[in-house]
Length: 492
Image (cartoon, rainbow, N blue to C red; front, side, top):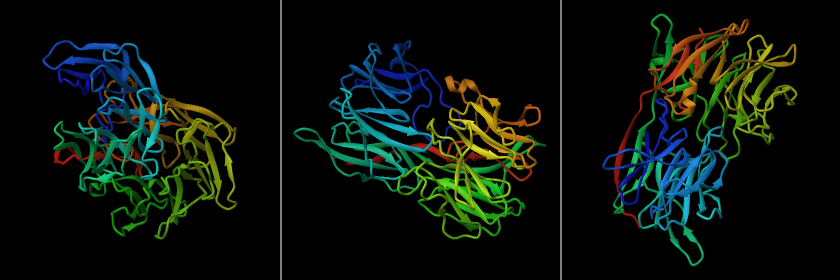
C-alpha cells in the first residue's frame, strides 16, 4: 500500500494497492496504477473505492468527490469511488492532483518521460478550460507537485529543485494569478511542498542528489567504485582506450579525462544537459543529445574532444533527436527522432553530404546502436518491450529479445549485446528488479551477467547501464539522502 491523501476531516487515509520501485531516485509520486482504498485512521479494514484504478488521488475539500489519475487521464468520482467519469486527458502521465480550496478547480502534474519534462496543468471540475500553467516560464519545464495554502491565496510547487509560490485571488470572472516567487535557495533538491493548515509552515522533501560510479567485478560478483566513485554516468571510452568521457550527476556537465582521471577537461556548460555522449572513431569529436535552452525538442550536439563550443549537428531539423551513435568509419550518425511518438523512427545522417535518410521499417523504434562491424543496427520499440536488430545485408528486422529492458550496448567485439532487463511483475505493482543480461548474436542465447536486487541506482533516468573497455558493466549507485524538512513561512 502507498499513502496518497487524507480526508478533510482527518478520519480516513486514501491509499493505493501498489508498491513503489525500490530504485526510483526522484520523488514524483506513485509510479504504477492500482486499486484505491479508504482506511480508517483509528484502524480497521481497507474499503475498496468502487472500481477506481489510479496512480494518484485526493478527496475534494468537502469530502464528497474523489479525483484520481490513471495514465494520461484524470477522473472524478463520488467519494466512495462509484460513478467515475473522465475529467480530462493530457500528453504524458498525469499525477499529483490538487483541489483548490473552493473545490472548483483541479491542478495536476504531467510527466513526459521521453522529453524528461514536468508540467503543471489546471482544469475546472466541469472539465472545461484545460490549460498548461507557466507555459513560457522555464525551458525545459520542471514544474511539479503543487498544493494550495488553506486560505486559497497561494499555490506552492517545486521547480528546478527549489520551492516556488504563486499568489492569486478571485476576480469578478476568473482566478487571477501572479508571477511565481522563489521561496527557497537551498543546496538541497526540494520537492513536494505541503503548506500547514495554519499557513505558518511548509513541509517539503529535501534530497541530496549524488551517486557513486561503480563497475562490476566478475570475480567477486560485486560492484566496486570506479574512477574513485565520482558522481557521474553515461561513461564512454575512446576507440584507442586512452580517454573516457562522462556526465556529472546531477549537473549534467560533460567532461573528458584519461582513464586514471588525469587530464580532466570540462566540455559542456549549462543550460545544456549532456546525455549519452559517444566518441567519434578517430577520437576527435564527441556527440551527445540535450534538451535545448529554447524549449524545443531535444537536439544532437557535437563538440571537439579538446574543448570549444558545442554546436547543433542538424540545426534545421524540425524533429526531436536523441541517442546518436557513430558508424564504425565515422562517416554517418544513426539516431532516433521518436521521443515517445509512434510516427518517429530511426534516421541516418551523412556527415559529408548532410543528407538524412530513414531506416526502412523503423517506425516506432528508438535507441539505435551501430554494431562494431557496421553490419547491424540495434533498436527498441517505444514500450521498451522488444529489442530488434536490422541487418544491412538482408535489409530486414528481426527480434532478439522481449520484455521490459533498456540501455543496450554492443560488446567491443560485436558478439554480444549487454542490457538492463526489468522483471515483469514491476509493471503490475511488484518491486522492480533489474538484471544485467547479455544476448549472443550468433544463436540469440541469453545469459545473466549480474543481479541488481541489492543495488540502488540513481541518475538522469534513475537507472543507467554502461560498459568499460573490457565490457564490464557500470552503474551509478545512489549515495544521496532524502529527508522531510519544515520551513517557516508567512503565507499571504
